[in-house]
Length: 72
Image 1 (tube, rainbow, N blue to C red):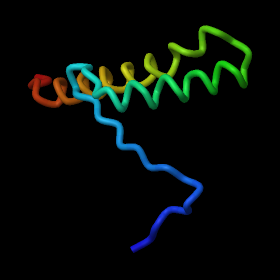
Image 2: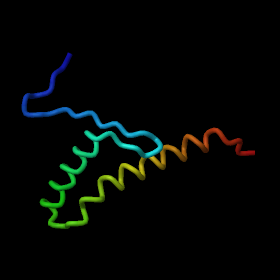
Image 3: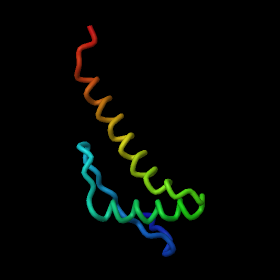
Image 4: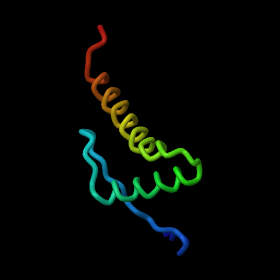
């Protein structure tokens, strides 16, 4: 079993396909968003990570739905 270095913190992030987030996931994403905003000096970057993850969930939902539809 491989362990991560003591300099790393593992935080599981749970999102549901309906788009709901657990509080820990929200907190981690907000923290990462703030770091990105500071690094890029773009205040609106704080919404980008949430938006990208939400888009990925929606794409996954679409693929799952389309695989159940008969294409004939």
